Length: 57
Image (cartoon, rainbow, N blue to C red):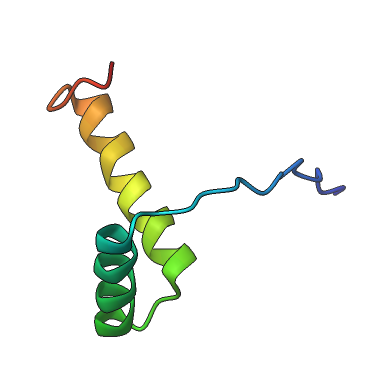
């Protein structure tokens, strides 16, 4: 079975100092990379939006 290649393009994101500190400290606590923390938080936000618990405008 042939696997489909995903067209993943990097996103340039420069967090503020407070956000960077928050991401890095939580990444260390959970043994993730900073990028892994961003992915984790975005997955949670997307899940909350799908459930209708938050609305992103």
